Image: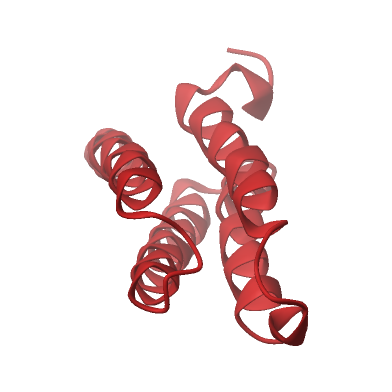
Length: 119
């Protein structure tokens, strides 16, 4: 592997970011600086932290960034749920997006364990 772009977790996170941006386009305009911005920032943070950690020296520092990515993922999941509760996204769209974030959660957790075991 030569770059963070080769990581499946980074690719999956980028896919989620793209979908979140599309899905939040129809949020109410009064949410542009609220929930819309918050959910987008949380989801952008996931692949960003994976990439930033990859570029750091040392596996302990890399693991720290992977943990930050996981925290951002949980934040995004929570905001998706809030969006569903407020009826900004449909139940079906929520279920699809939530399952994708759960898949990334499993992938990220597994990858994190792999990196930790190589220390």
